[in-house]
Image 1 (cartoon, rainbow, N blue to C red):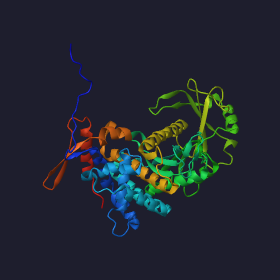
Image 2 (cartoon, rainbow, N blue to C red):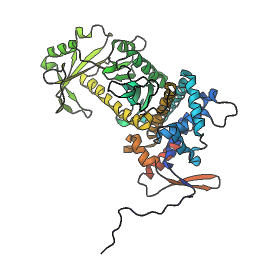
Image 3 (spheres, rainbow, N blue to C red):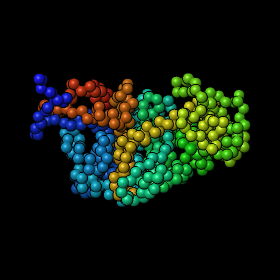
Image 4 (cartoon, one colour):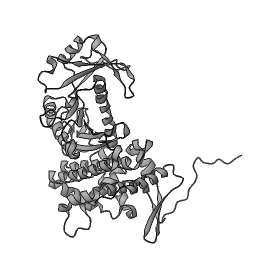
Length: 458
């Protein structure tokens, strides 16, 4: 009778290993920080918050927390993961020092937040310039998507409140730059709000849009080269009027609620006026048509606004709403773009769904829960989350190619950041040797080579 062998090999473990580096693949993020100039920028703007004779630079402390969040951490204490590897991440502040800095920045309110945002904006412009054709502004336009996020609170935190989904927590409004079909996306604004904040609050949408525009290079902060997209939460008179204000003239594609007036106009559209909708590859979308509404349905809205409606056969099992028509699901949106067929405009608006991917990535990168008690502290945490998401978007844009360019944070952590290595010191040089058998080592080494070829800031 043969002795049964287990499914996994038995490994004997011993402590005391030397020159072994865990999370060695995170050097990709460290090099991205260096090449983007974010370390210099954030250290400069946070210098007023550095106390006399302080050992740790506030900018370095904040970046260390952001790197920990980018690597999968979800609280301030997770910075200990970096502290354990000083050869890769340098000196890392203690947990009490990190907490004191967050409290200090929170006490400074908008002044500290604005300083962090200005550093991010400066680094973003440099990264886009370095990325060239891979940058989201390569075709001369930028698309910004606004969307709300529900963040569940598991304890009674400041401003936590019941949400419209009958949960309890916060309802921040975020903005993301869409990288289009050639990439992912990056955050440019996050407005922390109570859980009971309304979805159709025009003032919040205006504030978030202003924060987002301030993150873009100057040439995109007004004019038709920037497209603002929202779902129907942004379809309010005040927000659309703000987008279309003279001197700003931003392009917009804003979802609208199907009102009774819109419903009646849809019923009057002739069969010949409906045009088959298309997919991203140019093929006709089966069972979907689009048409443009005109007439008094546009009264009271800014001049130049177009209202485009789409009807589609509902998916099996889907429930029709009261204002759907003839067994068709109705949706509509407003835009001020002219000179393009309505099928292209409808496809462009439908691609706003990519914002859901950005929200999923944010939840996996520190936004699953707001870990701090006070609202002012969690506002600083939101900025840290955005820095982490920036790095997770900039690193693939600068260092990765092919399919790896589209990997979301969880896959980047599993395949790249978690790779272990051996640190070899020879003379004055330190060499990090990665496992040859690791299937994704070539992505790490090739990415580091691409980053090394980029010019240093300054």
